[in-house]
Picture 1 (cartoon, protein in one colour):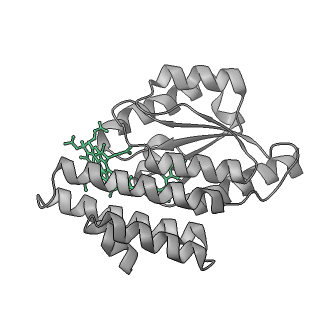
Picture 2 (cartoon, helix red, strand yellow; picture 1 turned 90 degrees about the vertical axis):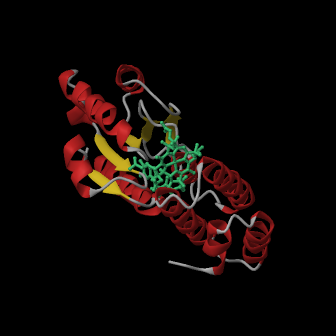
Length: 214
Ligand code: B12
């Protein structure tokens, strides 16, 4: 996907990008689709960084632009339901990884869909995650992973859930730009995705099935 909006983010044209986001949301376009285009721009920024054309400063700047775009879009992600929460989710970016933009979007979308979300933040130790799972008995644990340096701690957290006898009571979902189906298998996840919408769709299905089948 390479739209004008993705390109303006890729080129770090803050004002152009934010103006486009405002104009398109005012014209009634779907906030989630606009977010997806912003994310595509971020992916290209990552590729430019990897190629040595961009440096950490550019990564940081892209993150700031993205955050501002999210601020504009957030009020337009309307609440779909009321009443009792559909399910409980513990979300975390594990030890070795400080990326949180994608995780924060997933958290917002899940709340919009009436899930109770416990977001543990970034650089989370596996033991801390397991403690939270013990405390709140979630239906789903969601791991966000953007750097390979967090792969091991993510897998360790999943292992600890098995060892604690908590694994069979919940589903594990992994997402984030560098994840693959192979990484999903490595962690023993039930679902792996590169986008928030399909992640939310999976969570909705998993919790509806639990409610219906219980
Ligand atoms: C912005 C950015 C940063 C920012 C992060 C700011 C922040 N607050 O998050 C800063 C500048 C801090 C940063 C730092 C670093 N970064 Co960086 N960064 C990026 C960049 C360009 C964009 C990431 C992003 O936010 N994308 C936008 C969001 C919305 O997309 P997303 O995270 O994929 O999330 C979506 C989906 O994946 C999904 N999702 C995400 N999580 C979850 C969870 C669940 C449960 C579900 C269902 C769905 C889901 O939903 C989201 C919305 O659709 C990526 C490039 C890329 N390809 O991703 C590199 C990238 C991730 N960074 C990289 C690197 C190397 C680093 C550094 C190590 C650089 C350095 N030398 O210091 C450090 C990391 C330090 C650390 N230990 O974590 C590499 C990682 C390579 C690798 N294979 O490990 C990448 C891939 C760039 C590259 N191509 O080289 N980075």
